[in-house]
Image 1 (cartoon, rainbow, N blue to C red):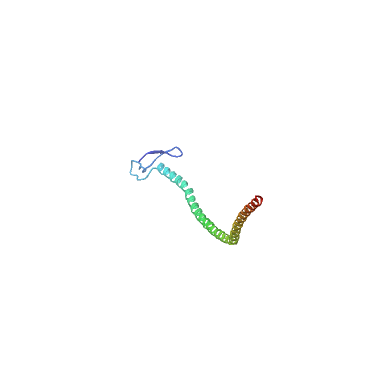
Image 2 (image 1 turned 90 degrees about the vertical axis):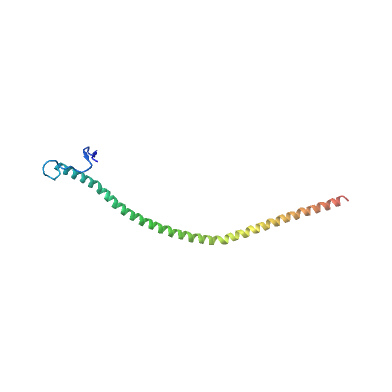
Length: 139
C-alpha cells in the first residue's frame, strides 16, 4: 500500500499513513511531512473548487433546459391545435368541391355511355342503309 507515485511537479509521494518520526517521546509529525500534506491538500482543494462550480452550473443549466423544454412543449401543443383547426377548415372547404367532382365524374360516364350508344346506333343505321342500297341497286 506504500507504492511511490510521481506528482505533477515530479516529486515522489507515498500513499498510506504518515510515519511518525522515530526516536524521542514526541508524538508529532515532522515539519516536512506537515508542509507536504498541507500542499497536497491545497492542491486537491484548488482542483475540486472548479469542479464544484461546474456542478452548480449544471444544476442551473438543467433548470433552464427544463423550463425551455416546457416552453417549447407548450408552443408545440398550441401549434398542433392550430394545425388541427386549419385541417378541419380545409376539409370543410374541400367537401363540396369533392362532391362536385364526383357529380362531374358521373356526368362524364353518362355522356361517354350516351356517345357509345349513339355510335352503335349510327353503325346500325349505316348497315341498314347499305342493305337498302344494295337491295335497290341489285334489282
